[in-house]
Length: 490
Image (tube, rainbow, N blue to C red):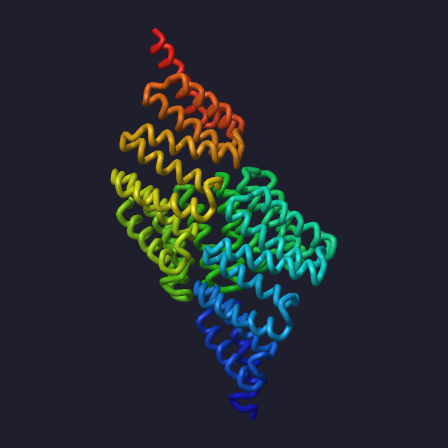
C-alpha cells in the first residue's frame, strides 16, 4: 500500500487531472490537481519542479474555467519559485511569463500581456538564440496580441517570422508550421485578403490531415478556423460545410458534452442563422449553451458567447425582446468576469445598442454605443478598425435623432480610420463614404454628397463587382446626389 501521501499517489492525481482537463471537466481536474499539489508540497518541498508543474497545471485549468485572476495568481506562484531556484533569465522562467501573458490576454489586459510576452521573447532569444522554436512561440504570442489590437501589419510580420523559424527547424510540414498558417489566415482575413487567408488555412489543413489524419480534434480546429474565414467574407454555405465537418469529428472523438464540441454546435448555429435558418440556428445554440452551463458554469465567458449567439438568432427571427434579455445576460457575465475594457464587453454593448436602436429607443442605444466606443478606444486606441465601427454606430444614432452635424463628425472620424488602416478600396471604407454622402445630402451639401457617393461606388465596385446589390444602391444614390446638385444650381 502506497499511503495517501505518497508521491506516486500524487502522480496519479496529477494524471487524472490532466485527463479531466482534456475532457473539459475543469472543476474535476482542479480537485485532482490540488490534491497532487498538497502531497508534493509536503513530501518534496515548495521549490520542487513537480510543485511548479502542478501550479502551472492548476493555472491552466482555472484559465479554461474562465477564472483568469486566479489563473494568473497560480502562474505567478510558479514563477516566484522558478526565479528563486533558476534565476530571472532561465528558459523555464520565460515559459511561465508566456503562460501569464496568455491568461492576461484572455482576460483582456492586453498591455500587461504584451509586457509578459516581450519579456519571454527577450529571455528566449538571449538564452536559446533568435532562431529557437521557443522564440518562434513568443513571436506567435505577440502576433496574436497585435492582431487583437488591430495592428495587422505588425501581427503578420510576427507570424511570418515564427513560420520562417519553424520551417527552418522543423520542416514545412510540422504541426507548429500549421499553427503559424492558421494565425496568418486570421490576420490576412482581417486585412481583407480573403484569397490569401483561405490559402493559409488550407495549407494548415493539409499539414494536419497528413500528420494526424482527417478525424483528429486538431484537424477539426482547422475546419473551424476556415469556416470562420468563410463566414467573415459572406461565404455562409462554405462555412457551414466546414463547421459540420468539425462537429462530426468532435462529437465522435470528444463526445457531445465537451466544451469544444459545444463550440462547434455554436459555429454551425451561427452559419445557419446567417443563411436564414433561424430555428435550426436556435436549436444548435441551445445545445451549445446547455453544455457550457453544465460543464463550465453560468458565469463562464463561453456561456456568455452562447447567450449572445442565441440573441442573434432570436433577433433574426424577429424576437427583439427575448434577444435583448439574452444580450443583457451575456453583458452581465462579461462585465463581472472579464476586464472592464474587454472587447467582448464592448461587443455586448454594441449588440444591445443595435437592439435598442431597432426598437426606436435612440437614447438607450446612444448610451450603449458610447459605452462600446469608450471601451474600444481605451483598449485599442483611436486608430483601430473596431474604433471606426464604434464611431459609425454612434453616428447612425445621432443621425436618427436629427443631430446631423455631430453624426457627420463621427462618421468622418470612422472614415479617416478606415482609410488609414484598411485603405480606400476596402468595403468598409466604401460604406463610410456612402454614409457621409447621405448625411451631406440631408444637410443640403450636394457637392460634398456627390463626391462621397462617387468614392463609395468606386470602392464598393472594386471589391464586390458592379453587379452586386450594394453597388447598385450606391450608384442609385450617386445619381440622386447628381440630380440634387443640378436642381440646386437651377
